[in-house]
Image (cartoon, helix red, strand yellow):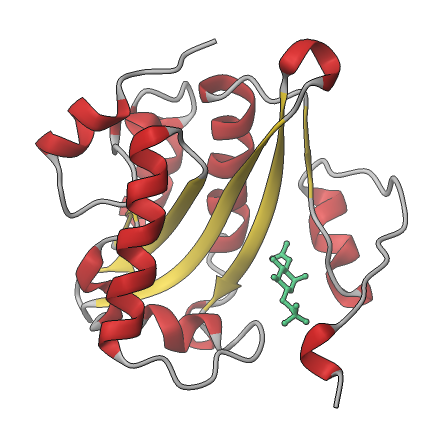
Length: 192
Ligand code: 16G
């Protein structure tokens, strides 16, 4: 299982949330990046200045984002990067359309460190969004493919899970996810 030297990599590319080599070393990287390139797009880790490239507007296509001024974004980004420098947890991958200078797709791999399965890790696929102007170009499929490969190859997770709405079950089934269990929740954000 590759663990890498996160703090060293971060010194090389301080603006990335996690080392880009985590992506470029994946066996499927060339294929995915070629497909994206063919439609003028590029995948990479989230950067500090993706605030200006519309990362939060993109997330608004998924759910409520609320008011997040730049200092709040910066503080959260730095917090995630600091945590990643100790032990990698937050792998936010974005797809950028360089012609328009916008992030048009995104997804997150969240790593949960376990004792079970011989101290393995569980991956969680989170916050998948594709800008409405850029749908039907396989962006969702390709970004999910990268996240699944990160979980399997780069981090040796024993499984990757997600939760989604009924409408999206078909999309994830097409991308090799099998309906496995119920998700239950207590919504603190809906308590009055
Ligand atoms: C979906 C997302 C999840 C996100 C949630 C937000 C995927 C695979 N799942 O379940 O990551 O956190 O929506 O919805 O992208 P909420 O605001 O109702 O929690």
